[in-house]
Length: 114
Length: 441
Image 1 (cartoon, each protein chain N blue to C red):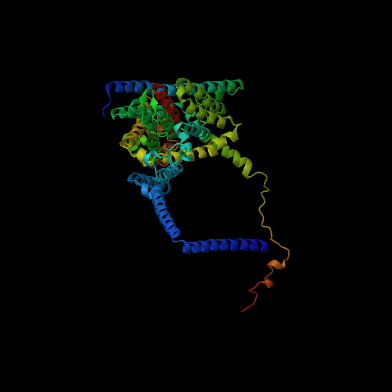
Image 2: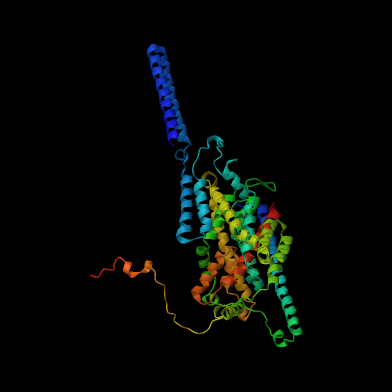
């Protein structure tokens, strides 16, 4: 049950070459997306400079974190959705109903006094 | 109604009358001719004999007559799968179909002398055999990848691309187990199929074994049919991620390392999200074209999701389509564990190698994260627990990392970070499968 040497040496070659290809594939992806974000950032910085927002464009990090996005979304939600057109006057309205025999106490089963 | 009753009554009366008359006639005849009576007696005897044989034959066709210990053991395994899924919630979407499939596949039936009653999964022409085609021909795995692509958000990976390397590092499990399998006497294609269990990706494991260990000739080498054991091992270990990974994570990391906080991922623009599947597809499939069925479908699914204009298609791919395929895949993979084919020493070795493969993959990811930390400074350091998610069991492995992280710092959420190596592990294991196919097919 022990592997023949030729079989094993072929396996070793496949292992070394195969693993390095897997690694290089993902390393290439890493480089592409690492540089892509840099290219996109440069474009955004240039646009900001054109718009005259130099103080933002020159910040070392102009990325927006997910937490910041969540905070902005929450703020917008609170500002626009919850307290939009309210009068600000809190009153207690008197509850009045028109008479109906369906809810009348005098037709109830327990109207007899003890 | 009255008429109906009347008609029924007449039919019943006529039936009784004719039966009675024929019996009476027979009785009269018997009285007249004794010789004929003997003939009738002989007939009765032969009927009795026939009935006895019929019952015996019926019994020989039942599960009770054909049951073997193997069937019983496998049925218990199936019940354990169902129990684990219900009681401990271990991957119920996989373990329930597989567990039930194991029971279905191990109901004993008559197959003496290679008789084909078109019942079992390995009998040509049976319904289960047709459904199993999707596994044998590698049809189901790409469809599952389509669904995975349509439900995966790659933004954590795009925001921190260096975590992609952890997904690559964890693939070491595949190749080390490949070598280990060669040592245990498996031939090259079989060893490659066993090694892929370390990729922790069920569909990829099935895809590779359907190509390299399908019982046919592969590149001039006769292979055994190992699809069943490999698929069962891969899915079992995927379900057991919460049991297998934490001890290795604790063993290889210090308490201080486990509490490292990573900077929150940045927001990713829509352009980047759309570009990722397109660039990913082109890059990875140019490097490993054999992985095209898997990676092509994965990135296609992701384009459906991220394009924003094919919502209906993306919804179908990630819900109904993937559910249908999981049902068929789970059931047939379970049923493929028919005891006479499945219970072999090779299967046991595959289970052992699979577990080792999984552990090496986990360790590979963690150790590589520690290695990367040697070069990273300050808030760029990586929590090595995240490396364990380099195995591609999505999203279980990332969930385990999150839970382990919370144990040592209840405010340190690692889930988003762990998703990055987790999805890159899917890409990595598919590329590895492609490379192994191109080397050995």
